Image (tube, rainbow, N blue to C red; front, side, top):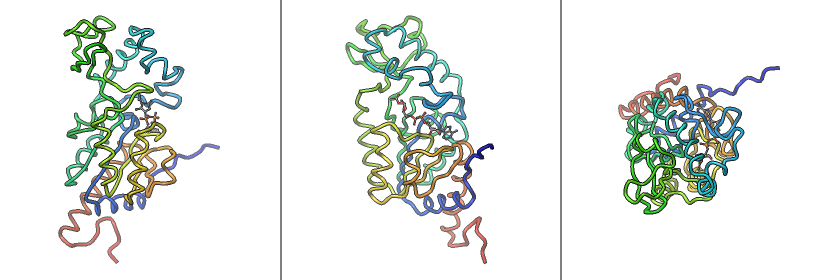
Length: 270
Ligand code: OAD
C-alpha cells in the first residue's frame, strides 16, 4: 500500500500564522531543504550529497591535507552547480516575512547565497559560504573569483599558500560571531521558524531547543519528521516553496486586519 505524504492542513497553517502574527521577534533557521526546490541537493537521504561518500572523506581538514586537489574537485562541482540556480518562492517568502518583523534573524546552515539573492539581509552563515575562500597559510579570506578554480588547489594571490573553501568542515568550530548572534536570537525570539533541516547536526540544532526552553513557539516546515517535530508547536508537513508563500500571506493578512481592529481573515466570522 502506498503511504500518503503528510501534508500541512489549512488549520496547521492558520495556527502557525497566528503564532507569527502575534510575535515581535523572529528567528528563522534554514537547512539544505530550503534550497531543494532551487535544484540543489540536500545532504542526507537517497539523493543527498553524502550518498556513497563518507562526509569526513571530503569535508574535513584531514581529507584536505591528504588530497587538496581531490577535495577541491568535489567542491568545484558544487560551486558550479550553485552558479546555475535561482532562489525559489520559499526564499522570497522568507525575505518578505522578515520585513514584517521589527526584529528578525535569519541563520542558515546553507553555504549558498540564495537567501541574499531573494532579498534577505544580514544572513548568518553558520557553516560558511561557498563563494568565499580562505588561505591555509596567511588566513586571508577572499571572494572566490572563477579564475581561482582554474588551478586546483588554488594558490593564495597574497602569499602563494593553498586556498580552501570557506566552509565549516567536520570537527571545526562554527564562525564565532554568526553563531553567537544566532544563539542570542534564539534566546530572545518569540517564534523560531525552522525550515528544511534534519536537525541532526549540532550545534545548529541547539538553536530551536534554546528558543523552546525560553518559551518561544517553534514552527517547523519540512515534508519529513525530524527529531524536532515532536517538540514543535506546529509542524507544517510540506516543502519550503509550497508552504512558506501561503504562510507569509496569511501572516500579512492577519497583521493588516489586526491593525484595523477587524475580523480575522480566513476564519468563519460567525
Ligand atoms: P539534511 O540533508 O540533513 O536535511 C535536509 C532536510 O530537508 C530533511 O529533513 C528533508 O526532509 C528536508 N527537505 C527536503 N526537501 C525539502 C523541501 N523542498 N522543503 C523543505 N524541507 C525539505 O540537511 P541539513 O539539515 O541542512 O553541514 O544538514 C545540516 C548540515 O549537515 C549541513 O549544513 C552540512 C551537513 O553535513 C556541513 O557541511 C558542516
